[in-house]
Image (cartoon, rainbow, N blue to C red; front, top):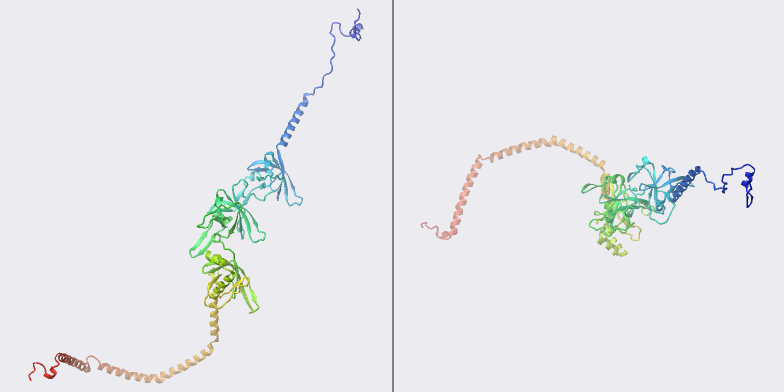
Amino acid sequence: MTSAQGPNGPDKTDSLNGHGGGLPPDLPEPVIEPRSHWLPSLVWIIPLVAALIGVILVVKTVSGRGPTVTISFVSAEGLEPGKTKVKFKDVDIGTVQTITLSKDHSRVLVDVQLTKEATDFAVKDTRLWVVRPRVAASGVSGLSTLLSGAYIGVDAGKSTENQTHFVGLAAPPAVIGDQKGHTFTLHGDSLGSLDIGSPVYYRRVQVGQVTAFSLDKDGTGVTMQVFVNVPYDQYVGTNSRWWHASGVDLRLDSSGFRLNTQSLATVILGGVAFQTPPNQQSGTQAKDNATFRLASDQADAMRDPDGEAVHVVMNFNQSLRGLSVGAPVDFRGIVLGQVTGIGVRYDYTTHSLMMPVTIDLYPSRLGRRGAQGVEQETAEERRNVLQLLVKRGLRGQLRTGNLLTSQLYVALNFFPKAGPAKVDMAGDPLELPTVPNTLDELQLQIVDITRKLDKIPFDQIGSNLNDSLKNANALFGKMDKEVLPEMRGTLEEAKKTFGQAQATLSSDSPIQSDMHQAMQELMWTLQSLNALADYLERHPESLLRGKQGDKP
C-alpha cells in the first residue's frame, strides 16, 4: 500500500495507519472548528433584573420629586420625620424629612419634601401652619388630628416668585387664599374683646370675621383687618359705619331699660358690626383694603362726624369727686364734647388751689348750619361772639348725672345773674368761666346762715327770757291774789245787770207790750198822713176851699 501525500507533506492519517494506531480506516476525518464565545449562567439574570428595577424606581422617584422647602416654626410639637404629612385640602403634597434647631435655638427648622405636583406651592406668598386641636374665638378646630396626628396645612399662594424658606404661622389663617370677598381695615381706640376669628355682623347676620390686628406704632390705637365674604361685601359702602358689637349694651334712660346685643356669641367672644346710617344710601361699594373708623358702640358710630375739636379748660373751685375722664359736656341736653383731663393747680396770685378740667368741644354738634357758621367766621368774629356769650352769662357748671353713682358731668348754660367775666382768647387752651353748682350754692347758703346764727347771743337771750318768765310768774301770782277777787265781784254785778236787762227785754214784759201798741199807733198815723198828702197833691185847692162835700 502506497501512502498518500498531501500538499503539506505526508498525510497524517496514513502515517497513523502506517504505525498501526489511530482511527479505523473506514471513519471520516474529524473537522476542527474554532472555540465559540462564553455564555453567562442563568443565575446572573435575577440580580440583573433586580438592579434594572431599582434603577427604574430611582429614576421614577427622582423624576416625581418636587422641591425641598424649609419651614421655621416656634415648636415641633406633633411633628415626626418621615411620618408627618403636608396636606392641601386633605391631599398629601409632601412629607417631613428632617427636623433641626436653628443656630440660635429659638426656632425649629423643618425640611419638607414636596411632590412634583406641588411645585407651584413653593412660591413667596404661600402660608404654612401646623394643624392640631385648637380652641379659639372662632371655635374648636383640628379634632381629626386626635387620631391621625398633626400635619402641616398649606394655603396656596398666587405669586410667581419661587421661595424655599418659609416662616410658619402660629395659628391657622382666618381666611384662605381661594375664599372670595374683600378685606377692610378698621382703626379704633382699643381692641376690646376682639380676637382673630371674631365674627363680623351686618344686621345681625354673620358675614365675615376678624383676620388680623396690631397696635399702632405711636401706641394711640389699634388697627385690625376684617374679611367680609361674598356676596355680603357689596353692602360695605364708602359711608358705612363700624362699631364694637362686643358684650351687652344696657342703658337706662327716660324710655326705661334697653338691652342691645348682636348675638349670644358676641357676649362671650366679641364681634364687629357695620351698617349704613339711617335715611342714607349705602353709596359706592368700598374698595379692597379701604379704611374705616371703629366706634365704641352703635350710637357713637351713627353720630355725624365731629370735625375738629376745640380745646377748652374750666377751673372749678370745688371738689371733683365723681367726675371722670370721658364724662360728657352737655348744653341743654346736647352733648358737645367730653372731659379729657382732670388736675389741680396752685394759683400764685390768689394763693389758692384750682381744679382745672380740660375739655374737647365739637362745634359741629350744634348742627350743620351752626358748624358752617363757625367755620366761615374769622378768628376775630369768633372771639367777639364768644365774648358776647360769656357776657350774657355762658358758664360751665358741674352737675350730678346719676343719683345712684353720684357721677358728675359738665353743663354749659346761660346764667344771667352770674358775675362779670372775660375770656382770654390768646390762651391755649381757651379758658371758660365757671359757676358753682346748685348743691354747692346751697351749702354756701347754709354755711352763711350758720355763721349768722353763731353770732346770735343765745345764752344772753335765754337768761333774759328766764328773768322775764320769773317776772311773769310773779305777776300772775299777784293777779291771782289781788286782781282776781275784785274781778269776781265785778263779774257778779255785771251778771245782775245783764239779768235785769234780759227781764226788761223779754217778750211778755209790759215795756214790750206798750212799745208794740205805740208802734201800731204810729203806723196808723203814718198811713193817715200818707192819705192826706195824696189827697192834697190831687186837690191842692182844698187848703183854701176845704174838702168838697163839706158844708160851710
